[in-house]
Length: 101
Image (cartoon, rainbow, N blue to C red):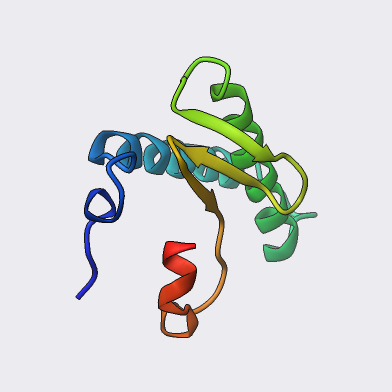
């Protein structure tokens, strides 16, 4: 059974997790709405990733609990003291230590 993020670290509050989750959902929806015949799943995925990173970077100036660690393609940000990056893959293949690193 998985623990709630706030049980792993106090910086990972429900409000912060929900805020970032809603941001990602909104940005991905906007990305899909702008798709046209020239797009593929790959191009939409790359663009959605970049849009999400860009939105989080913009927010970092307004939200003191967001800090950008690495703004490159290996995007990493902090929520409080906790570093967060995106993961693409099967949950079953994700090691438990990766969740806590």
